[in-house]
Every structure is written in C-alpha cells, then in structure tokens.
Image (cartoon, rainbow, N blue to C red; front, side):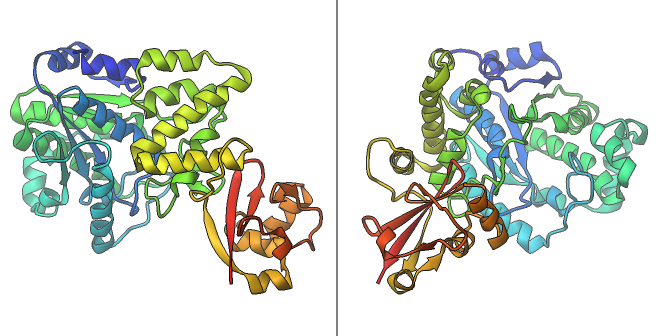
Length: 410
C-alpha cells in the first residue's frame, strides 16, 4: 500500500512539515493517529473546511486513525488567525448546538465508529480546567516572546490583540497534549495559518512527555482569480444542504476557474492521480468535461450519489444539455393568482434571493443579466405572467450561472 504521507504530498496537502522523514516513516511502520480541529463558530462547516475533512479521509483510507476535534472549548476563546478583529462571541449553548450539527456532517467523509475514527469535543477537558493549576502546569512551558513571533499574533498586534485571544495557542497546544496522552495522537494537520499553534503543541508534548509529535500544514487556498476558497458573491458555500442546496453546491464546482480544475480534482475527489492527470490535459471547451467530473464527485462525497445525480441532471437541463429534470434546482412556489395579475420581475428576483435587493435586481436588468425562461428581461417594468409557465414552472436566471425555479401552484 502506498505511503499515506506520499499520497497527501502528491495531492498537494503538504505545504510545511515539522520532520518529513519522521512523518513518512511513521505512516510506513505503524498506525498513525492524526487530528484536525474544527471550531463550531457556525452551525455548518463550509467548503473552506473541506481540505481538512479530505485529508482525514485519506488518512483513514490508508489504514490510519483520524480524529476530528470539535472545538467547542476553543471556540469560547476565538482563533485570531486570519482575523483583523475579535471574533463575535457566541454563547456556550449556541457553540454546543453548532458542535452537534458539525459532528454529524463530519461523519459523511470518514467513519466515526470510535475505533477507526473519532470525533471528540475539546470542551470535555478545556472547560474543566482550574485556572491557577493550568498556569502552573502548562503555562510555564510557553514563552511570550516566542508566541509573539507567530504570524497571527503579529498581525493582530497592529489592530489590538485581546488577552482572551492570546490564550488560543496555549489551549490548542494543550489539545494536542491531551490527544497524545489519551489516544496516542502524534500528528496534527491544519492550514498554514495554524503552523505556530501546531508547533506549540508538538513542543509541549516534547517538554511534558519527552515524546516526538509532528505537524503538517496545507496551503491556504485562494482561487486563480484571487478569491478566498469557498466564498462567492452570494456568500459562503456551506456543507449543510439546507444552507447550500446540492444543486448550488454542484454549480459552485462547475463554475471553477479553468486554472483551478487540476488541483481541485486532487484536493476534493478520491479519483486516482492518473485519471486526474488525464482530465487535466483537456483544453478549451473540453475543460467543461473535467469540471463536470469535479462537480459530480465533490457533490457525491458531500451529499450522496442520489443528490449528485439530480444536481447533474438539473445542471444539464438548465444549460441546454440533455435531460429534463429540474427538481434539484433551487426552487420556490408562486400562486397562479399572482401570475394571472402579473408580477414584476424586479420583485421576484429579490424575493427568491437571486439578488440581495430590488435595487440590485434593477441594476441586473439594466445590465442585461436577468432572464426568464432563457429570454433576456428587456425592461424594468417586465412582468411574469401565466403565459411564462412551462411544464408548471418558470425558470429565472441571474447572470450566466445562477438559476431559480418558480413552481406555479393553484
């Protein structure tokens, strides 16, 4: 079996590593227990969290043991990494509720049977700590001077770093120590912005337990266009189908910049690298085929085969391909009574969320970007009527790629 570290490296997951030879040898000679943390600052993970989930899934597929830490303890503090200001503080009840939802999402990507894989809430040890004891037993191992060299802290010092946030690195390092002591965890993975925290945890294990522990970071992804991965004009791309439907999720991947397709296939699918290489050689209009594979595989992994099939069928229909299934497209109902009277397109675009406001809807129409049943909306006083209903529905489009289906009901 191929070394799991080599698989991660070949797919682009390795940006920094504390000791490459030690990590590779560990994967070759023993079952490695590795962890990634996910702070429940919302009730769903998003596409930006997918790298961590996919890395842990590869680790389990290689015969090793992944641990997903639900950071309902660290979320009480707030990670300052990548932030210019203090995160909004959530109540303990909200954080706990978010954590329960996130745990159920993580189980889609790899087994959480308690043996082959685990999901653990770090509140189970962090919220039980006694402050003075913790300072004496753990705080003594941390140098303030060294902590201030961490990139996250250096940036925040310019705008103001709270004492609360300053403790984040210590608590994350303590997580690593507890996981080592209780589960034999010797590897932590995370984004490049977590490098200082990961090193702090490995160093704490060395000081307290005189043991070797390592860390691996993956690159912080932006698209070829410079946008943060998982962010769109409509907001974050969530893993919860109630927040981002499987169809919208599928469309996110279909809309991938041509320059990103190859690396996204490596990151977000389990396809063999040889197949990814073949798809990556496609040029021009044929790149669409590679995007369809990416969209289908990413949607299947996150939402299941049935949802991926429906999303693909709806996408083909919407974009003039084969098939006639629009059931997976984001949709809402509209009464025939309203349609008989005629309803302004401006109003409907804002109502269904294709635009953020009526003002934005007006600008969209003026710029020629609004469509009803693939026909451009010509004027601001254009209305949708019963004559626009096709097979019981009206299909709206904003720009080139955002669709919504209006089902006409009596």
